[in-house]
Image (cartoon, rainbow, N blue to C red; front, top):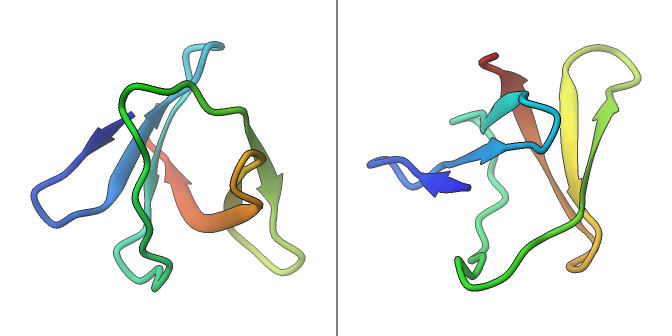
Amino acid sequence: FAITRSGTYVFFLDNGQIWKQKPADSNRFRLSKKRDYTVKVIQGAISGYRLEIEEMRRSMLIERIK
């Protein structure tokens, strides 16, 4: 993952997909670059997607870049 200047996360998945945290997402927490995380992309009930970080039991709103 990477962190943008605005403090949002960009995730690079093993399958080649790239997702970024939506700026409107209010979930702010710190991830360690020294660690690998297991994530799951979940389609929202109405629209959009959420990225769930299994080790932290937290999720955030995301949008696909690639």
